[in-house]
Length: 271
Image (tube, rainbow, N blue to C red; front, side, top):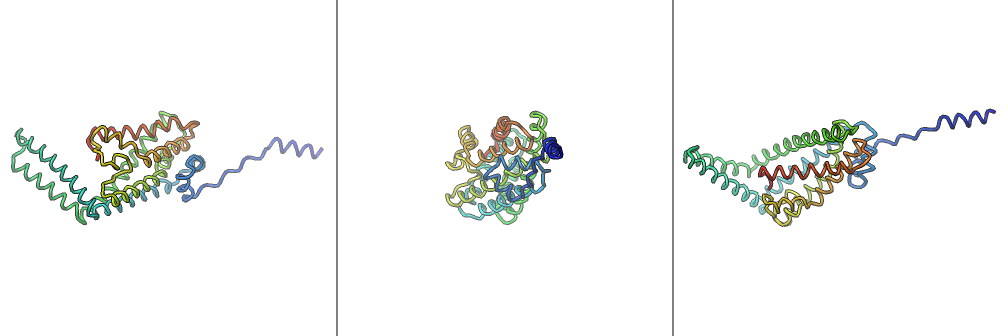
């Protein structure tokens, strides 16, 4: 009688599966590269950690600042940077002359503005310029990070009816930034070795294609590391927002990348 009662108790109260241990940040960092699906599935079981987005973002910022200093210090790449800046000044001079002809500016005012731009380039090529550009990198990285997190959160939460939070989106977008840190490092090494300006690891940068053209824009999307980043980002969003399928998040991730590129192209910000 007692044995039967014991068996009934065991059947009525099956042992619940044990909760897996929370991954350490180093495990998450490694998992982004090796097992993103498993890593984000396990990460989603626990409250999002600030370190999950802050540390990778800070690493990208540090690598980007170092890369900028290296490019500005290297004789070949610094010359190319200055040459690009001078091309921009020539375009601005053309626009200034148009304003002079329309009577919007006097010839003296146009000359003053042109000279100010040239002095600005000279200042930016020195130590002060490195400090200013470093601050600019920090501000831009944080600003764009939160803008894109907001975009992914709103679409995942309200368009796809996901179960995550804003901090879930921060983790999903933040941890894959370790891949962007690798991209920045590879691009800097290629720039120094080949004497070219590599702002990314795309075919467009490799062959020095003009990204202000349609061909250059399309070639800029052929970027193995960027494709890797957006693939992992899609997986991360799907897992952090408890999706049954990754498909719609692949569309979201790559769609935002492509649309952002098109907007930058239309505004003339491609380089």
